Amino acid sequence: MNATRLCKTPLTSYGSFRSASSKASRQKTSPKPAILKQRQPSPSYQRRPQTTPKAAEAPTDSRGHGIPPRALTFLGITALTISTYCGYLYTSYRREVTNASKLNVPRDVSDRYNSTASTFDADVAISEKAMGLGKKRRDLVQMARGTVLEVSCGTGRNLPFYELGERRGTDKDGRASVLGCRSITFLDLSPQMIAITKEKFEKLYPTFSGVSFQTGDAGSVGLRSGEQYDTVLQTMGLCSMPDPAATLRHLGSITEPARGRILLLEHGRSYYDWLNRILDNLAPAHADRHGCWWNRDIGAIVRESGLEIVEEKRWHMGTTWRYVLRPKTDEKSS
Image (cartoon, rainbow, N blue to C red; front, top):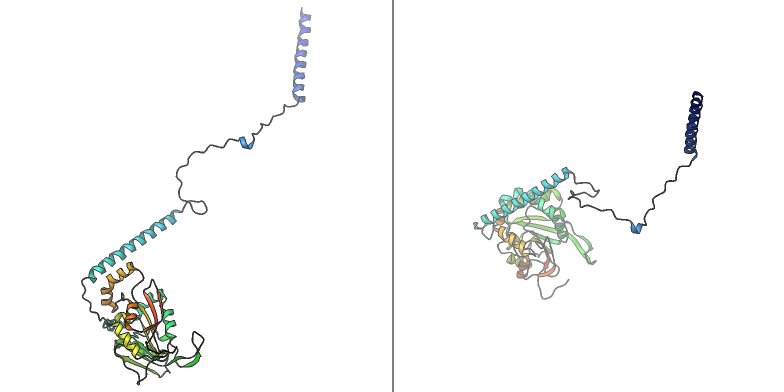
């Protein structure tokens, strides 16, 4: 029995070993089963991904990023500043309207210029630059020729634009003409303003002798040496005259009838009723402070004067008026 047991044990072990070896060999040599790729469905049958509603997103700039906090702060401060300034303007406007209703301002306010002469240039410099009035003054003044009279000359704001000394040339229509100023007379009611004009002129044109300076009323100015003027010029003057239409009528009587011209650059009523209401409401206070009725209808004044309109232009919502006029006569040469 021992012998039998001894023989059975190795045989059994050998069989187990062989079985294990065969199994291991099969695992090494048998190819791995191929992994089947999942068949992708046709694009037309693909299911669209479900989307869920997103929460409200913050404003983004052009690059897709949220607006920086500094920019939001700046926008907020800007909006607050603008609204505060508009509120200040409205409050100031209402206060001025209330004060203006209590004023008793005379029609003739020209004496105000005596007290404002020394600061006049500084007072109007910024507004005139913003409105481009320097160019408009220049274009008008350079039309002056021959014997020239400038009324309501003020502090001489037109002086830099004069072409002094006559010369042969062509006018804007290409016709032969005499250009430039042979002589010039400056006139204003304010002696303080005339003094400032005279000082400026002597610095700009120290060698020009055909000039004179007069203090007086444009509505009664006479002829120079009995000679009618070739050009009468006025800028921003009708607003301060007690009877502007009568003054224009008189200026027409001293202007050479055939080729003489009256040149005006004025401010007055607008095209728009809402702006005219503002001008009307603030007119008494403005006239009392600055000597200027800024709400006058310049077109109506010109028509009332009886002068013939050669040219009319308006800017700044109609509040700036430019006229080229001439006396009305039965026979005119152009």
